[in-house]
Image (tube, rainbow, N blue to C red; front, side, top):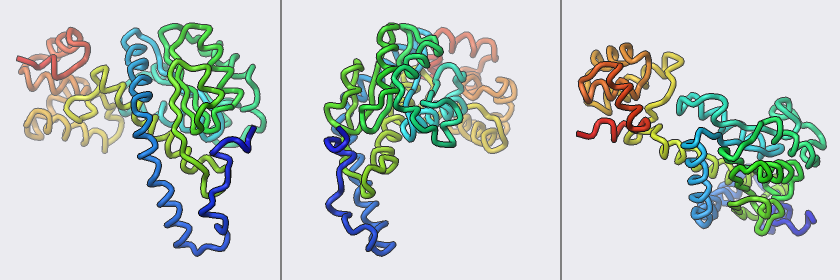
Length: 296
């Protein structure tokens, strides 16, 4: 089976990779990487379908769950972890699971990806419901762990999405939406942490960011639900408030304090010249969308 996968084939342009100069290797890698955005462009309709499922889940009180093995699993966990500080969501709202458990994030767990039953068991442990969207990732598109998790998620009624880097992948058969970004042979044969990994990372960026915009986590192009958990982020929060309202630093600082560190609420307080309680109520009435809440 492996020899039939494009991601496992040899790149004819790098057959003498071990004889290239450092500069030529870097230029070749850069040239190959430049192909990735164009490949992703071709599958945007499928990415759009996936985003709509995620938004649907969030609006129903459900979750976005990423699952995969190796590099693919780590990329899912990475995107999930970044959603909390960026968009102010709970650890439960966006989760990432990886074959072999948490230890597999920092070290290889041999054979973990080959266990379809393990994927099914993880789906049960996650208590997946019909409100959730499960996105399974595998560059090859044939990882048993990812397929097992997708199968069980389907049984449990969840929305399902697969992301692979081969056309007509095995995994695609078990997903409502199949995103197949065929990135081609790697410069280092079979090393799918390269172009395939880059493609998966870009697709995950698109899905999570667009879905968060779709539920009101962004105003203009500002991440207004960001959590100001350190000095840099407090300064960024004040700057966002100033940019969104044309307020000065003193006004923005006071509003952020009065809003208990909630950037979004501080913006509404300034724009509507209202109290924290009124801003909170108005935002709730408008499902968290600042633009609708401040429309006069």
